[in-house]
Length: 169
Image (tube, rainbow, N blue to C red; front, side, top):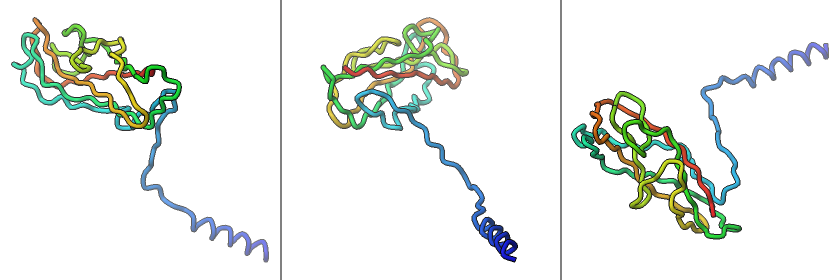
């Protein structure tokens, strides 16, 4: 009798903890040895360059520049000599626009150029060092669409991806 009551009690207890899953939460991140943390919105971001008129890009023309921000937080400058950071952008190069990031999609004869202040960013080469302070910092860059100098501009949508690496000094 005790065994039967125990079995019934266990069955009733287990039935009350059955729940249906309504969704999931996935947590992602990484741990690195840099002097600063990178805010989540800066790790993987999308910059909308707009819907650009074809005539604006013909003969090497370019679109308006848009801001690209890399936000740093919790910077600890202990052990840094110069208290600066450089950023290196890497990407597949454009076949239509020398020095530009290559695009994929229906648009043709275009590439994405990036700037750091008044200087063009060269893919694979560290930018000029930027001073950073303890705490939070924002690294600011620009990006615009550059048309090919001689190739025709083909209307269509496009996308491009660049990776960045920070080096603290």
